[in-house]
Image 1: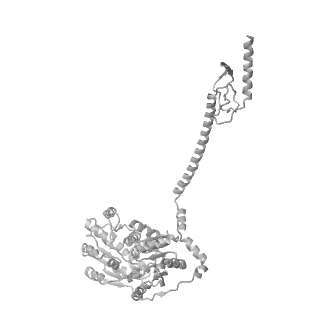
Image 2: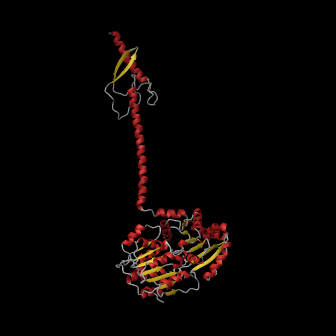
Image 3: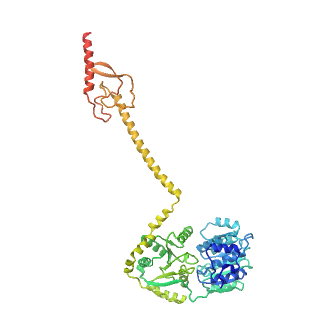
Length: 524
């Protein structure tokens, strides 16, 4: 058994990239298949999911292709968009210290951007059959230089109805090429393709006593159809997984389960074919990065998608296809880690479950629902798990990662609001001061008596003139009086909204002046 990648004849730049990716020793399928591919032999690899098939063809093709030669030199066909993106990402990591260019093409993605990437020169192109064939018909993908063809998850492409498009693509490729086929199962239709389009292929199969991953513990719980949602919640509280994928048979069921989990307060998302492609990729990436821990999906995400550290797979619906069960539970228990797969089985599902057991060669044990006392005993752990998987917790965590620039903007906004509020208050006070000042001036202008102002004169106000002329009447005769500059208020001044001034001072002053004037008049 080969114990290191260097023994496989891999070039130093690739060995460095493999080491940086954290891989130390090749898997069994890598040890057996890579040497034959490096000899440019056609091979059929039949292996269980999660065995490291991407590195088998990725490492080999990167070493055998010339980045300076006209391309693309390799075409990789995958059944789903998600798998195409993941394979391309893995190739980019493996070619980190090489000059190869790679890209992925798939439906519901910009054709213009894909054409631009192809025109820049590629060594390897990965895509779904439909989009690859569209590029061929459009003339944007030249297949004359392709030396390697990879059919990844071939049985899945058959299940999804892509096999006719695959054959049409193969007809456009040069006959002098190396063809590599990878599949968990080899149905008769896939066998026919191998016979028609491959040259003396070598079949490499990893023997396993079962068709499922040995590191996955499998069981099922009985559930009534109407109570499956409650049973799912109870199961999650009992098992408290770090991360979990819940599989449903239909898109409607996936949406219904995701909405239920959100109503329960969990940070959960749905993933299925009706969701726009960009959002699907973003959701999958967020799940891989730990942005949330509960993903509700249909089988579109079951094949070829690797999620690091996935601890639990729940079959909310028992799959109708027996191989789908294998691929679903293969999402957990990878890289030698232990995983768990649990199925919720109704009375109508039991016969399907028996067929799955016969197909995989394993007896799936029935588990008894735990008593409510179990949750009570572990109430603190349950509460902590609920908090860590709650929507609020995820939102708070996201808020904690808010970029500093945005935090400064929010702080500046709050300070601006406070400054604006202060300016408004100051302006309002200033306006009130101006209004009071205007009232005083209006009172002086409206004065029609000789009374001296009894109110307090503002200290910063200058007299309006040197002499105030006060017009008064006495028995119909006008009397003119000269007085010191002052603000004159009349006794009946109510326009300023203040109480009437005291009369005695002004009244006595006028009376004395008037008396003196009369006396002088009589003497004359």
